[in-house]
Each structure stands twice: as C-alpha cells, then as structure tokens.
Image (cartoon, rainbow, N blue to C red):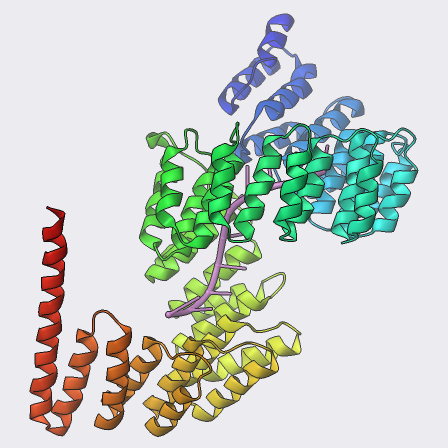
Length: 582
DNA sequence: TTAGGGTTAG
C-alpha cells in the first residue's frame, strides 16, 4: 500500500486528485506521507491557486508529530507563495510559522528573503536575517546569496557587498545578486567591473547588464551586448523586446519578436503591451488570437489593452470569456485583472459593477491593493457614490498623484469644486505633485461650478508645479470663461495660447457663443472648427442656431445650404472612392 | 539572480 501511494505521489496532482490521495493516506494511517503530498502538490502546480494554498495550509496548521516535518512543509508553502509572486502572503506565512514555534528551513529563509526584497520590507528582512544567524543557517551559500539579493533590492549596497564578501564559495548566483545590487543603486561603473570580474558568467549575468541598458533607454548598448553574448535565452530576447517597447519603438520590437526562436508567454505579452502603448489595438488582437495557450497574464494584458484604448465593452466581453469555465478558459482574475475591468466599467458608467467586484473580492479572498482601490474610487466618484469613494480613499496605504487625481476629477464632474480645491491643497501639503490629469480635473471642477477666480488661480498653479498646460487645459479655461459670458476674455485666452488651438478649444467658444447669443464669436469659432474637422455639419448647425436666436434668417439659410453642400460633397466623394474599387 | 499583466483626463 505504501509503495502504491508513493507512486501516486510522484505524479503531478491537481487539487481533486490531491484530495483523493490525501483521503487515502488518512484512511490507511499513512499520515507521515502528508508532507510529501504537500511537496508534490505545490511543486507541480504551475498556475497559482488559492484553493490549493488554503487546503495545504489546513493540513499544515493541523500540526505534525515532528518539528522537522513541520519545518519542511512550511518551507514548501513559503517557497510556493514566493515563487508565485504572493510576496506579502509569503511573509505572513513565514511569520505564522515562527509564531507556531517551527524553526525555519533554508528553503523558507531564502524564499522569504526574496519576498521581503520584493515588497521592500526592511523590518521583516532584518528580522529574517537575525533569525538566519541565530539558527546557524548563515553558512549556507543559498541563504547568504539570499541576503545579498535582499540588501541589493532594498538599496543597501554596502550591506549587500558585506554579505557577499562573507560567502566562502561564491557561485554565479551570488555574483549576479551583487551585480543586481550595483545596477539597482545606479552605480553602472562598479556594476560593469563586477560583471567583468564574474569568473563564470551565465545568461543571467548577461541579461542583467543588457536589461540595465534597456531600462535606461540605451538600446544601442543593449543591442550590442545582446549580440555579443554567447548563448541567448528567451529572457534575453524578451528584454530586448521590452526595451524597444519602452522607447516606443514598436516596429523594432516586432522585428525581434518575429526573429526570436522560442517565444514564451512573456514575449507575446510584452509585444501586446507594446501595441497597447502605441494604441494599435488591431495588432494586439491579432497576436492574442494567434496565441496557442493563453495564460491569465495574457488575458490581463489584452483586457488592459481594451481598457486603455477606449474599448471598454471589448474589455468586459473578454473578461467574461476569461471567467467562463465551460468555454475552456476558466481563469481566476486577481486584483490586476479587476483594476482594468473596473476601469472599463467606469468608462461605461456602470457603477453597479463596483458592488459586484467588492463582493467578488471578499468571496475569493483577493487582496485589494491601492491600484484596484484607485480604479474603484474613480468608478464610485463618477457614479456619485461619494461615501464609498471617500472610504476607499481614506483606506489607501499610500495616496499618490493618481488617486488624488481620481478624486479631484470625480469632484469636477459632480460640481464639488470646493472639495476639489481642498484636495489639491491637501496633496500639495503632503508633497504629492499634481500632474496634467490632476489639473484637468481641477479646472473642470471650477468650470462646472462657475468659479472663474479660482479657475485662474488653479491655472497659475500649473506654472508653479511645472505642469505644461495642454491645449485641453486651455479648452477648459475657454469653456469656463465662455459659460460665464466672458467671451472676449475667452477669445484672448485662445489668442495667447503657445500652441495651435484645436477644434475642442474653438468648439468651447462656439458653445459659449450659443449660450450667450454672440454672432461675432460664433462666426470666428465656427470658421476655425470647420477648418480643423472633416465633418463640419455639427458646428454649422450650431452657428445656424445662433443666427436663429437673433433672427438673422438669411444667414440661417446660408449656413444650412453650406451644410447640404458639404454633405453632398462628402457623399459624392465616398461614392467616387467606392466606384474606383470596382 | 534576469524577462510579462493594473489605477486618474481626452
């Protein structure tokens, strides 16, 4: 029986099988095999699964007879969490292990050190270091290398160097961790020296240095090192692609993508995100379609692509496909998926979705982080559910420019100008710098509430914080002055613009001219709008309305005739193009 | 030890 079970345990198990085998173990009183079951299950689980974590945790918390076994099992769990990027949970589980008096294994220590580095927790990192010393595991190369990695990531390069020097037999990983430290600290010269000193360079050594140049936007150095390296891994290619994507060189990125021999999921995602940034949704879709096996991150990337490029309906459609287990996909969304999805529903103005997301989060144990909260804040503010928005806002771990901007924008839409002004004052006091988005929200708050004085003040504030006003910001100013009937002033603002006014700016003046029946400014604004836009009928009809309001019937007829003429020309143009195709 | 997915406007 024992051997049969052991055989079963060597196979890859999905949760249902784990449960069955576990039941059999218990039935046959083979409890001593539970740790192996845990190990195998976690070892073979490719995609992160919360149900598996919970299941394993239940077994562990029940307790084992020997502390050695407990150490082993906890180590497996902490490593699993850290490997699947659940760093906070890895640290929490490690602490839980400590609290139950189980001594750490070197596996647990190295995994938790990595996690501490990733979440940049100095306090936790230090206490793990102290424990490693106490438990005598500091002589282990892996643990020592883990310490180099931790301090490198935390930015304590001197500590990293010290830990590195203490390693008796340094392996390439130890060297790479130190290299990483110098790269992180921005000391390229020393990094280069370390790189040259590495006795046996592996792909990671090369990849680290290549990626440092790529991150700096120095693609020519990155590329020449890439060409010089002896054996390229998929990661090397991906770094190069990512570098080009970050510089906006989508075409060069695509060339690399097409040239690389073995594409990984990362390659596809990087390329899709490149198209997302350049706004080329079709190309992203094409890649997504071509992908054979789509993992969760690819779905995330594609949903984000839709959400970021003004296609919220497509984002939600893909999200529901992702959830559908019977379509063969059935992937679990996490906080990252949901933040895009919430953003999409916000664009559609569907507040009810926020409630759904919040209950989904509690039901599935998803951790709500600041980015997801921010997208919910945006959603609730736009839907006028201020209490919910403020509650989330006050609960943020770290308020930043984006979350403040979401609040201010929401205030702007709902006419809460005073609140918007209070918020920007608060953020400035906290040294959180406003950006273009913040000011768009703030100015439109003033505009919607008719607070011209405050609007000017806010506009001046832009200079103070080195935010270059865009044409849109001028547009809001024009809108604000125009609504207040100060058309002359609005026109002056347009003439004072450092850039060419766009149709939005002139459109704001035209709208205001309509509100205040000004033929003079209406004509000027309309003329510019017609020049700038391919379809002028809306502008012309607006002008016609202004003529109507002051009883200039000849002009009304003229304007309408012009509209007909343009419409006709457009139709003729279209049919000519169509005709030439045949 | 390297490479991939997220939030605010228009």
